[in-house]
Length: 215
Image (cartoon, rainbow, N blue to C red; front, side, top):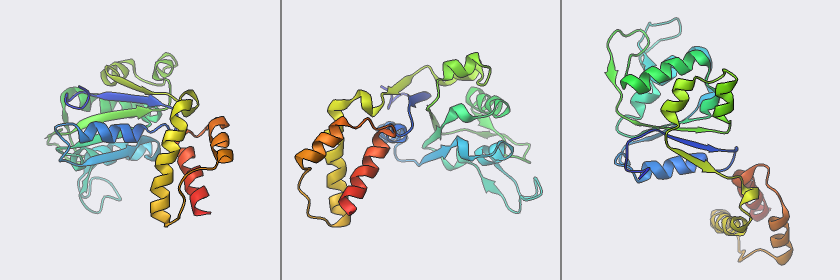
């Protein structure tokens, strides 16, 4: 149902739990799967450039605008736009995003004409947005706009039965990638993998297996 219905989806979970992978899966089973999947890390965009990066800008619209720039919304046309770490978005920028979601239209910086948004928007956060709303760091109206359909990814330490299954998937991946002749984990290695708590979640487990196979 999440894949077929064109609705906003909020994916919640600690860093490294695989939020972007879930977003890619949702995109792949949606009616926009033939279009692009555009992933954006909100935390990496400065507040002053947010509007230009999201909506695009016209040449000459500000000092360093030497040519027209296509924003993420236009780049994701007929596909999916994945906004990661949405909890890091500033209050002023939240207002602009809310307007986009409500009106389904946007204007490039320096342009008086409006364009129609034609992409699905998916969101992810490692923060508790309910607490961010209470602390007045996240708009309540935006929270309810994006959180009607939630997917919560538990940390790996709460999924002990998945550890070896995921580890063997990464083992097969990196044995093939690095050209190694490794069949399986030793009993000592399995014991370590089962006992470790993985503060970095699946991303850390992948790095552990990758390094072990390489070295």
